[in-house]
Image (spheres, rainbow, N blue to C red):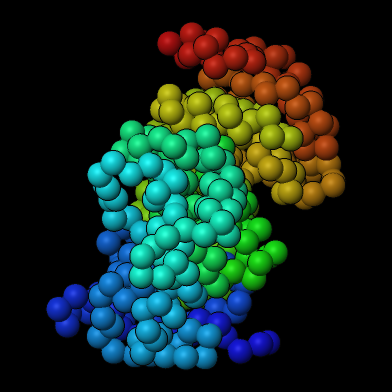
Length: 375
């Protein structure tokens, strides 16, 4: 590997000499994306503010491109580093273009006059974040999401080698979240820009990041590739989850399973059961589920939400023992909810559906009908 572009060595950050996060050590290569994740108040923003020199470190070392970051001149650092932090910006009578043009400060000299090249850089940055149409609007008159994109454009216009961002997807709808992360991914891959940011959306963090660093309880207990960090147990421990669960396969969280005795057997499979499992959870209706192959996507949601799920090996039909287990659960249930996947369990679910009807169980395909049956 090449020399680390950003290296934190035994860094301790905090306020007034009181540590918030201690002994932070990790390396980030040029063109890599690292996301900080962890509970609110864990110190992610404090780390970012320290790296931008808004607050001094308590101890430790920060090396940027082989040099001591704390010893760099302001203009030198500004040509290397840009930031988009959570501070509210409320300038008077400035357009979005004016805000973005502030990113050219390291290059404009003492009078701040924009050259043709500076204006071209500002226009390109606005275009990259899909904000060119609001360039002439008062910055204070645009939405929070538009402001976030303008502030990112200011950082891009600075033409930095590294960008620090604190919750950059806040205030953005899903379309603009994805666009923003795609921009960052492209900047890292095509321009070699190093990205360090905090994110609350775990699914997005795992998809966009090369590395993920966990921040919790005054430490950075783990830093590694997403597949190493974003495990069911790892996220549960990091956030102290006592109810509900995190599923690494789907990158999603599930609420706690409904309390009480299961009243319904859900015949699912092939992704058709996921929405209904969650509807049952919201309605507070406990349920059994099956028969699901071990590689069925339904299983990732059925396991945490159902009282019990009957499974069979991938690419194989359900054994007589598994079929008997499912029949016994159908006997205990008040109704059967058919999700329309007769091939579940290697074809066993079609037979279970017949069994349920022959046993006189109510078989429904709609949650509203199920609710009526269970009254």
